[in-house]
Length: 137
Image 1: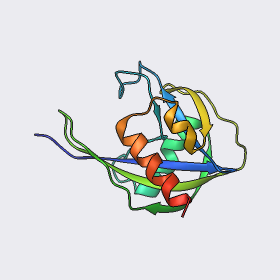
Image 2 (image 1 turned 60 degrees about the horizontal axis):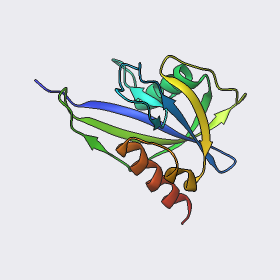
Image 3 (image 1 turned 180 degrees about the vertical axis):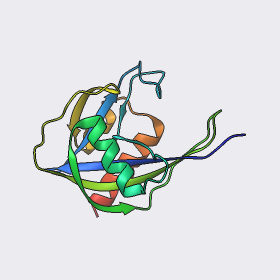
Image 4 (image 1 turned 90 degrees about the vertical axis):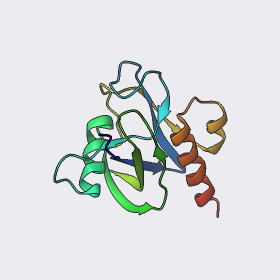
């Protein structure tokens, strides 16, 4: 039986730029290398807020302050089940030194025009396009 997986991600903004990480091809979640918004799955008995803070810490080494979640949901059907995405807006707390992880090979702080020059998954590109549209209102 297929199940629905909830994924939480944080659009982390600093000085008008947004953090993205380049997933490694060896990551269990990816079959190709692409730029993504950091985040991941919920653990049992974990709230959405707890999950996104934990995932960002594990993947980037950053501590974040959640500003708000916002109404962007992207449903990606797969053989294992549907994946539903909940996005958060966050800012870095304390040091801004990124650490390497098992999932990301590199990180970049991007602006809207970078969306044209980098390879993103469909869901990530849609989410970032939506975010930059919200920020320019």
